Image: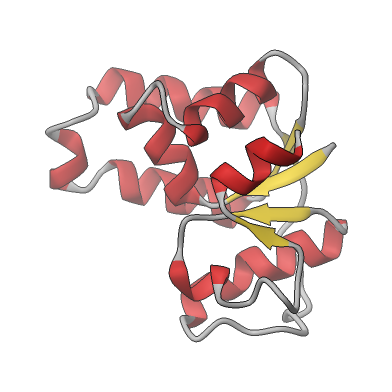
Length: 133
């Protein structure tokens, strides 16, 4: 199964190694799922990991290794050129919707703006995704 993970899911996996996001990342690393990323998603992950509040919780070397892992082991595709057919109330999330739609995969997120679209697109929370596996 291929999937797009929102950056909030990826960061949560680093912060809490026992939660649903960490279990999803473990599934990816063990080959149980395929993670789809794009340059925009990697760039957002880098920006987010550089925030002072996260630097206090995640060692810089660990953050850099995680970005390398995403870059080296995830399936990287170009950022979609077309806008998504379904839009989030947060325009910053639209690239994730476009990425998931272009690859015809589910989007896993903890973001309420995206989860509000669940009935209109294949979007699920980390816990819901784990239950589907």
